[in-house]
Image (cartoon, rainbow, N blue to C red):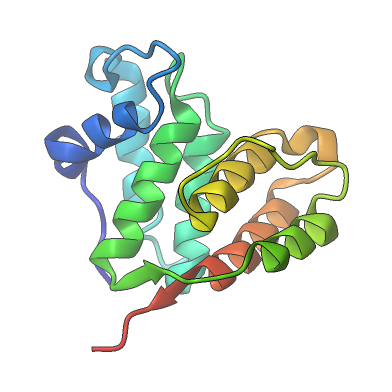
Amino acid sequence: MFYLKIRDCNDFLFDFALKFDKTEKTDHYNLNLGGVNKLEGILERIQWGFYKGFYEKASSLFLFINGGHLFINGNKRLALSLLLGFAFINGYWVSNVRKDVYKKWFKEHFPKYKLSRKRFKTVYRWAMYNFNRATADSRHHNCGFDDLKRKAESFLKIHLIKKVQ
């Protein structure tokens, strides 16, 4: 398994995250050394043997950043960027799933969450946007971390597939 390093964040993932959504002003992540140091700890933590397999590591990485409040703003965007970067370097790609499959998944796992009506160029962007917001808002869905991690792994198993070599 390949892992992201803080160097990868500095080289391109921070910029990628900042370009994700330009509707909200976000300072560059490098300006917050405390947040960068916490992020480096998270990147090291998912390498531990405690986290087994790609999906558990990916969901943990995503959730630690998404809900960790490492930075004043842009945590959800950064979580999504690092999740996709981690998936890509390990040979995982976004699957082609129909919107009704995602709607059913959200209804089952986050029944109180209101799906966005915002338009997106692709279904996977719509799904990731909603997944990102639903997990960040998990305290309103009575989810502990372990329950949330199981939900995230379930989502990622639908959303990310291993590319056949």
